[in-house]
Image (cartoon, rainbow, N blue to C red; front, side):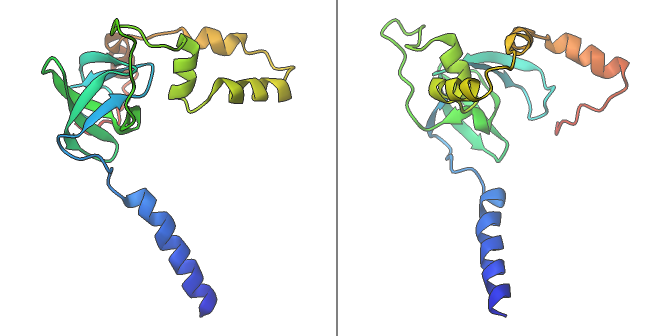
Amino acid sequence: MKNFLVLFICFISLSAGVFAKTSFREGEILYVSVKSTELKAGTGRFSSTVAKVNYGDRVTVLQPENKNTKVKLSDGTSGWIATGSLTKKKIVKSSGGSTVKASTSEIALAGKGFSEEAENAYKTKNSTLDYSKVDEIETISVSDKDLQNFISNGELSDGGED
């Protein structure tokens, strides 16, 4: 019985993180924490793009959800963004307002949860691996229109929630 109780408490503790709503609140100021992403008209992956947002852009929460959060940009544009692309931590851009005091690769790593030190340590432990193809793939970009055509021509489901 004691083991069951311990297991039950562990399950509830772990489940709380999975089923908990985001801690963002309506009206809260957040910052984009990824290199760049799209603000979408809906919550589906293939919803039309309303605007592009970049690392450090400030947004105001309109409607917090689990996977996506509806936000408003400083110009009044509103749309949905992946909740994981947002942070409460204030990201300050340089005085010019259009640049960030970090390299592009540092921003990309930060968005993926890596630091330069973590990447260098991984490369040191795996020095025989060739990363050039990964770098090449990261440069590929597919437009929403091309992606929609691919889905349509392949008779695929977009998996969206629209």
